[in-house]
Length: 113
Image 1 (cartoon, rainbow, N blue to C red):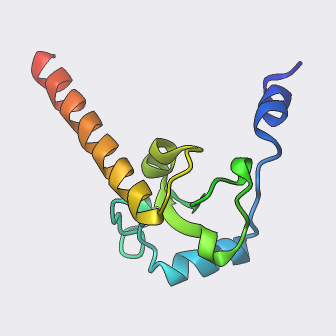
Image 2: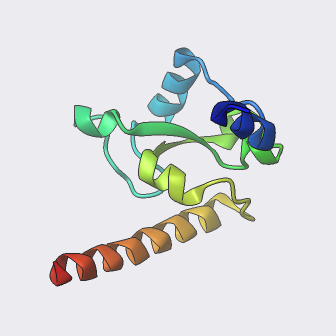
């Protein structure tokens, strides 16, 4: 079985948003990552890594509604993953904590190099 088919088998089909739907979310969130605040409105390179995150993951039954979608940079979206949180604020706190943990690891590795 091909890798992409395996991924769909375990995670279900990926929830694609139209460009128009994504732009509505980006505009509402002022082109900023909800979690870390990365500004994609004033920097094209930052805008290129913005994604749309399902607060309650689609793979866990989350809906594709505006109140379940936020702008997220790719790193924050990956750190949040498919975990389900009690609130959006709890998700933000966990993502920022994980970012800080990875920042510490990065700094230790740079010093050791």
